[in-house]
Length: 452
Image (cartoon, rainbow, N blue to C red; front, side, top):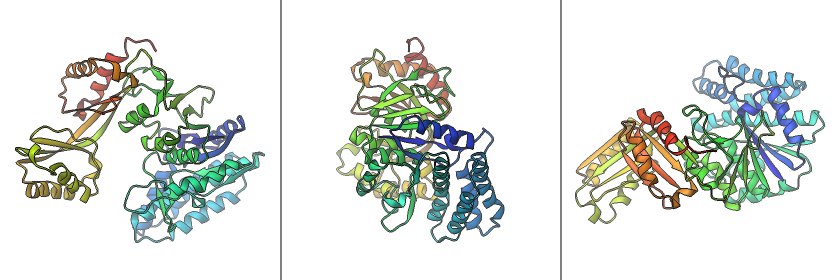
């Protein structure tokens, strides 16, 4: 069995959904299809998810919602018309939206999530209806039928029983069309996954049915060794390991979200990233292991929006429990951290800036100063993480020196260096103003003179 996931641009219009149908029909093993909400049809278009966020905010503010509601329904109507479906499906979608708008507004986050998830949910219903209309026996399956997730306040993840609940789908004779992006708690509360949520759903399904392959269809032919918006004509990656992809996705590779790898990684289901608009292209395979190549670096990625909590205290290294107490303060504020480079008398905690507000930042600084008796405490913003990734890095000497030299030529200062214990990645913290220059410099160092 092959599980397929189709992203927002792949299901944005009737024309795109016809391509999806042809892809699914072309291989009898493609029996489970996870779908996103309709994405942009052009660069100046608006995603259905954004229309739904706008609608939910209007409802929470007690504004008039009819015009915003109609915009959402019209997107589905345009798709249904293009697919020559009858009006019944759009009536179902309009009724579903109105029912969600009447839901409990006491928890604004859950109310918005419920509206946002309708994008995927209703698109799955529409696509299943289309498959049936062209003699492709299909069945819409709701996440209520087994995708059990954890309770608030932790970020959303599938509970172990979700895999057992979904495993019987492997015996389907019809095509299963499953909405991505969300699941339900045991109490029946809808919760959405983080960014790349539909990728996560597809991965959960692939793991649950022990698929031979998880195909992730998007709008690019493959994964590139660097961001093609920054680097001209980067090398295509034909095959990459789970670990390499995880590291690259962490720092900016948006083609496949890092959390989506976890379910398939656990049981070794390979992933193939392919292009809906060019399905015969081989794409990029993500596998447990791959043969060694002559190139130590597989890819370079960069992501901005990081902040650094710097703490200095004389004889910090002698103080038992200092690091634990520091991280406990962040945990109390529900903040996760990315890296903790340290010296004898100082430590930095790198975190994503979107977790910080003026209020919680002030509390953190005050608590570190007053409870840990630190000599110096600062919160600095505006950092990027540059990540160099490759299974071959472990057996390659002088790579860090080459990278540091390349970065120095841009005039940027390296604020932090961190290498994972697996030696598959090397992370540099820099001011985000230098991000693109550094990415180009590193690509020139490790790829410009090497044949693909």
